[in-house]
Image 1 (cartoon, helix red, strand yellow):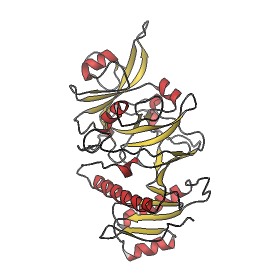
Image 2 (spheres, helix red, strand yellow):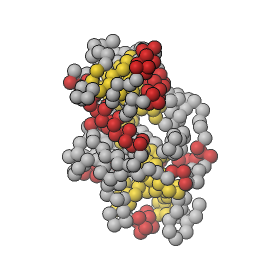
Image 3 (cartoon, rainbow, N blue to C red):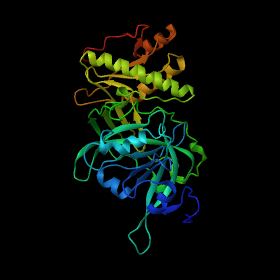
Image 4 (cartoon, one colour):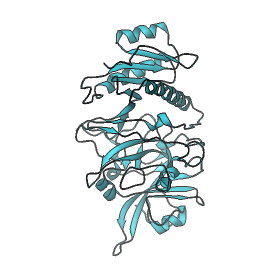
Amino acid sequence: MTTSLGPMAPGDIRTRAQIRQEFGGSPQGGICPSDEKKSVNLYSDPSIGEHVGYYDGWLAEEDELGPVFEYTGAGLTGDQTFDGPFGMGNRSILRHAEQGRKLRVFIRAGTIKGTATATHRYVGTFNLDQRLPYVWRKVRGENGEVRSVIVFRLRPDGAFKSSAADTIPAAKKTTVEFVQFQPITASMLNSGPATQGALSLPSQRQGAKSSARKRTTNASTEGVFVVSEAFNTEMSLRAATAASIAVRREAALTKSYRAHLEAAGHTVGAFQIRVEGLSSTLRTDLYDATSHVLYEAKGSSSREDVRMAIGQLLDYSRYVKTDAHPHEPRQAILLPAAPDPDIRVLLERHQIGLVHQLSDGQFTGPDFTAPS
């Protein structure tokens, strides 16, 4: 890799002082925003992250939009936050588009020979994933401390350079843990909603790829029960795509139905599932822990969306088990309006419940308010 001091390109190695000269930011810390350079510099050091219970890096599996780089937020001890002085760095990532700044990722490469001066490899420029910008996860640090961390999902925006060493390792055992709800409010973010600017569609396929992108062999399955922060936050995802419109509708629908279940005294959340041997994480839409019902929400009532929801329910349900409910959950699809009669027949055939919203905002469907 080159160490030239011309304009920085993905794969180049620099000291932090050299990075600051081009992209600004502070001389220390992992998340370093710069108003002047319109940049948020994200530094990752695998030797530190692994000791405190997390990995930054590429998911080994790409989705239909391409690669995802996961970056864990600021805070080495205790629960991470978006609130107050300890959440400043995390807020700068979440609001980078609104504030007109690019995310730039740097990974610790080593030191200058004969000195203690650290060097960092430039990976490239990123934006937050507009479909799922971040998730909460529970990790166990070096001292056994169990804490909640914020994992940002980054999409390349232009050229990037990946390395086999940057791929997140596959899960090695099955774990299911409850993650405490972490509400995110506008007041925590100091002004307005979480993001008011567009989370632009990435140009992630422009980068050079390494052999690390190949699929890994199966090793384990890991499921984590979480309560989704997305249900409690208004996030504007203003992109001129049908996909982002569907995301908004689905999020609003899920949030409304979550409020309906909570009004009935139910505990609700979602599951995060790490499939054995894969570094990516599956995530359900809504789980009613009181009645043990798994919901898959869709932003439209089309046949195509219902088919997808059925497949997701069949996939996820085998993992959704708890000590209180050791069997698979009942299944239901949550839609914004009534589907065609033929779709109802299809769902009945597979014993999948149908809940849909009425014109007055109320919901109709099977009564799942009683425990199974």
